[in-house]
Structure formats: structure tokens, C-alpha cells
Image (cartoon, rainbow, N blue to C red; front, side):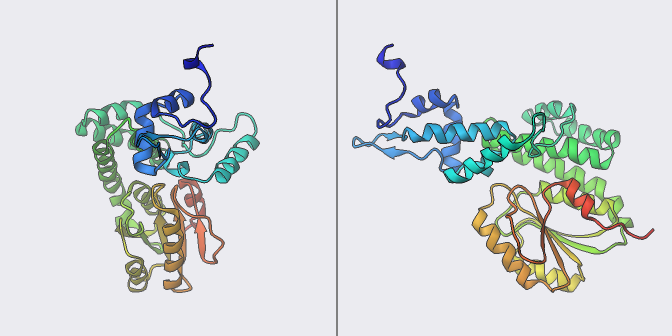
Length: 309
């Protein structure tokens, strides 16, 4: 075997090209991850070159295994080795044939809509979304069309296959349709009021809009505050609007420590009677009384108490 085909030395750092070959991750993807998440983390050689420790190979192999299981880069890149190993052990314990729940079921029309997004074909995309709402019905539309579409767009952006303009375009089109189809249900809603928002600095609205649609479908009155909302303002809306529930959607890219601190701070500001529901890929685990973590639209729908007819 020639020197060029030998396995990387355990002590010699790697160029980004060598790291790409060792992990089978494209160089462009590695550069995107480094820029957005700080992983892989480069070191400087004495000559000033940017290279990567050999230990990065094992780290990225764990990451790619979890990506294959349905996790998104923003959820796992940057996790310490122990947490990566813990997620891998959970994956290994799943019975054969069980599909990870990180990625929802996908309607075949999603691929065609992704092509429309790539071409910025707004009329075509809006038309396909409306058609799927009518064809699938509300809950299947959310679970099999809107949610997987936004998942694939976000994944494409995180992996460098799509640009931020594609994500913004897709999100705005989906948001427009979700507001449109929710409006008739909002007019007829007579149930408890629910204040809905994302935390300060979180501008990802797709999950919040889908949760708002579920609540409106079940007759709850939505007080929609939208993205980037200070916790003090959320609490004030609960008091002034007599809301029984607060629902937060927290995106996968939102810093975990900040999410934990903000959720705890909001809980302290809320009246004791108000319930706080959190969801989204970035929702922190919590044991605090009065906070419930609902990670899927299905679990949110199941949590909603039947309203009197």
C-alpha cells in the first residue's frame, strides 16, 4: 500500500480534503457545518494552516450515523461525545423496523414542491399546498405535507444544498397558506384562549403556525404573537387576554442554554393557573411543574381536551 492510501496518522492533523475522504462528507458540507455550528473545529499548524484533529473522524462518523436516523445537523453538531454516544445507544435499542420519529411521514407531492422551491415558483408551490390541504385533510396535511416540506428545506439549508433565500421563500409560502386555511376556524373558535409565540431571537415560525392550526381546528382561540417575543410580553398577554395556555415553539438552531433559561423565566412570570406547553426540536427537557413538553403535532392534538359541543 502506498503512503497516499494509508489510514491517517493518529497524531498528524488532517486537511479538510482528507477529512472529507475519511468521513465521506463533502467538503462543502464540512465548511457549512464549521461556519454555522463550529464543527468540525480546526486547529492551526505551526505554519498557520487550518487542519483538523484525527479524532474528528470518529466524531463525524457518529454524527452521520445519527443523521441517517433522522436527526438534523443543528440538533447534534456541537454535542459533547457523551451525548452523541447516548443518542446512538438509544438508536441501537429501537426494535428492527421502527422508523425514527424525528422525520414525519412524507407525501409523494413533497418532492415536486421541493423542485418548485428550487425554481422560486410561488404560484406553483402555493397551488400545490392548497391542493394537498383539500386532498389530505387538515391533520394529514400538517403531518405528511407541511411538516416534511419544512423539514427537508431546513435540512437542505443546514447541509449546504439550499441557500437561506430558499428557506425564507419556502417558509413564507407555507406560512401564507397556513394563515389562510386557519382563518375560518379562528372565526368560529369559542374555546380557551392560547397565547402562542417563539422566544426572543427565534425567528423560525413554521412549527408555531402548524401548532396554531391544530389548536384552531379543535376550537381553541389563538392569540398569535409570532416570532421573537420577549417573555415579559408573553406573560402580559396571558394576563390581559385571559389566556389559559401558553404554547412556545423552539427551533433546533436556538441555543439550548438560552432556551432553558427563557422557559424557566417565563414560567415564573405566568399566573399559577396558566399552563405552559413547549415544543419544537429545540424544546429543552424539563421537570419543572407547570411545563409540559409536546414534541409532535400528534401529541399536541392528543393533549387538547375535548370542547363541549
